[in-house]
Length: 510
Ligand code: NAD
Image (cartoon, rainbow, N blue to C red; front, side):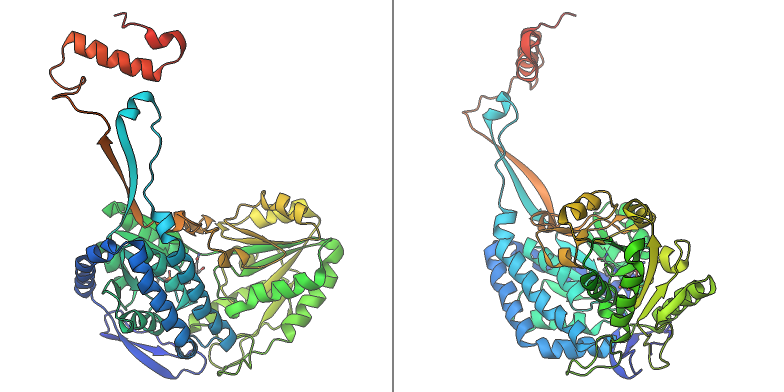
């Protein structure tokens, strides 16, 4: 089990939360160490940018081979520091491989110069170009829930853009990020990826030194990061907390809804930013849905897995996370809810029984606050309208699901939800489709990751270049010296180009 260690410690102990066994140590990087890492990255970055998207693709595809060839060991490291089930760990290397395909395969097209048409006749005198140049050093700060995949989500498009990257993983789970960087070094790639390990102060030092911050973590820390970035006038993107609603309508396939919501709420022991954290069910199907969901959840196998896929749900990443889940369940029960299944820690490591809560009210902490654990609170609603209103009644707006027999109805309701993504009759589907944006509304974030071209252009500065198309005189009409005839001619031409109808040829009447 994790123990509290003062932030001044020289190194950080990493323990398996499932059994408390010590599995590694990492340095607690001081601010000057972070600054030195950024300087080295800054030095290496121009050559990386100069390789161009095709040259970078070669290295990214070598990394893909390395990830797939080392997947079993990566999964071992993942399990050792998170206590997650083997199946949950298994997603991380394969989705990483898919991400590498997407960004390495599309970067050249996405980063290609643009040659926009001039908006008016005077613009015809110039050749216009927009080019995309990376921020030299991108800082990526990640949480503990997907310690290999979460870095991959953002490091890969930043590298594909031509930036160098400093990665700061969570102090709770730094070992998988170190594996990621080890892979990069082992394939002999240019030194444009480094890892800084440490607590919040190390992350703060990263924000003090890089040129762009991609932050994933809690809303509270995201707010601090945004304020610091504003002080330095550097751009940032924030992927923050969520409290994702599921709406189950009376016309839904209730078996699919109960299966999908069990997985969507409990995958990775519920420690997913886009996990289903509250369920609104139309009255006519409430009892049937609740019974089926409770049966599904009751059958889940909870425990410390090996390589054999023996368990469905693993441990929580920290003791404090387990305590938070316990508080939400206890407060709900004290306020009149009922645990249909689960409801307590197992007493071993940080395991908490997968839990379904019924008779839940919108005012309870299990509905108002992010839980990030294996709980599914269920609320009965009168109709579709009440479900939409309650789903939108949240400070968060990351993602939502709708379960219905009519895709058309689902898409109509989706447009009424205040949420960065809506999946109909499925959970997480948008996360595995990199052509779509993954971003939070309201307090769930600022900006988005992916979304096709915009997911790589966010790591670039736009540069406008103009080149003359015609032979040049020694001076332009609007340059010095200003004389009445030259000024009238220059402004007259500009007016003619900008105005419509007779105003095009109007004179200056003053
Ligand atoms: P956290 O905010 O405590 O920490 C996230 C990271 O920020 C860690 O690496 C931490 O060391 C670092 N950090 C802490 N203080 C910092 C500072 N002042 N400056 C810079 N970095 C600092 O979050 P957590 O507990 O590790 O992760 C859980 C949270 O992450 C949940 O709220 C979850 O919803 C969110 N999350 C969001 C997404 C998403 O894509 N929206 C994905 C996964 C997790």
